[in-house]
Length: 218
Ligand code: OGA
Ligand code: MN
Image (cartoon, rainbow, N blue to C red; front, top):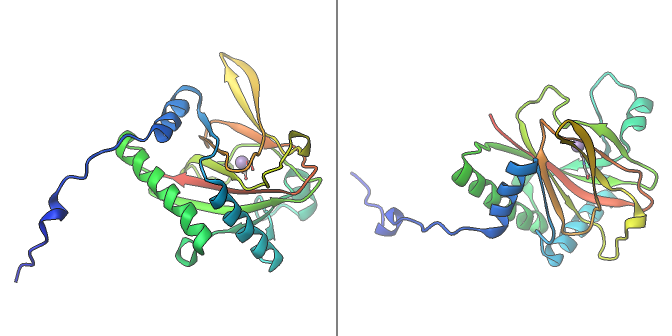
């Protein structure tokens, strides 16, 4: 027996242009990165910050690694953040809000610019006072599936430039290297081309909170 599907399933869903997503696409096309303030509402940011802090309190974070054969001292001289991968299948309410927006963005990118994003991975990151992440490229682990790097800052509302922890993007301006310094203000996201842009996180004076992730192709 053939099941008859309700009519509305066949109706075209009208395409609605999203100005924020359009800006991201335009920015990345022009300069390989995009910075969007208030991508996440302050309520969402505060739920995510609380979720990060709770999990950190439960001692679930690990010191970030770089490869397998490098010892801990060397790792510490390269990066000092603590991370926890986020599992979408067991996500809490805050993470549902996060993935809701991320999945919406991914389907927009795939629909409008055929980006072919098939996979994603995200982790919480906490940089204790005094830590940093030296200049690097996000595709160093023989993983060229990482297409777009994504960072979202979860610092408190009173975050000040003096707290340090700027993200520095190294850009190529017609053969001349230039730097773009970005403060980790809460709710701000930065998206950039993983395979092209080298970047670093400057030493932090105050604990710095974020979610970092990658949108990947096959
Ligand atoms: C990373 C990274 C940037 C940031 O985790 O690979 O470069 O601003 N993070 O936290
Ligand atoms: Mn990086």
